[in-house]
Length: 139
Image 1 (tube, rainbow, N blue to C red):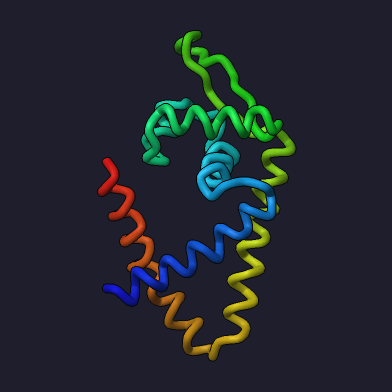
Image 2 (image 1 turned 45 degrees about the horizontal axis):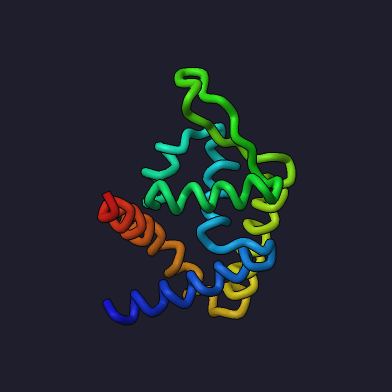
């Protein structure tokens, strides 16, 4: 398990570098990605998905909003609440982050023997289950 934890940590640091290229923290990039992918999305739902406390999420959203990467919209069901959607600039930043991460993975895989790539593809269901299990631990 220690080897798995270390490998996941190294991968996370590698992927986090792509958010830094957009001058975003990993948390900001994650929130932006969720809003770009699922938006418009409510703050409560975003809090549940990200596992952040509301104060931290508010700070992240404020930074992304002031940076022009997302905007707040009134919630049609509750005018006191806000929904978030990515701006064009936010969607473009998210796409650049995804592209950089994809290019990183492709470059790494190209340097590995084909059987390692095959083993990684075979391990995807287990890794996805691990990620979902970790997400479930936060709730």
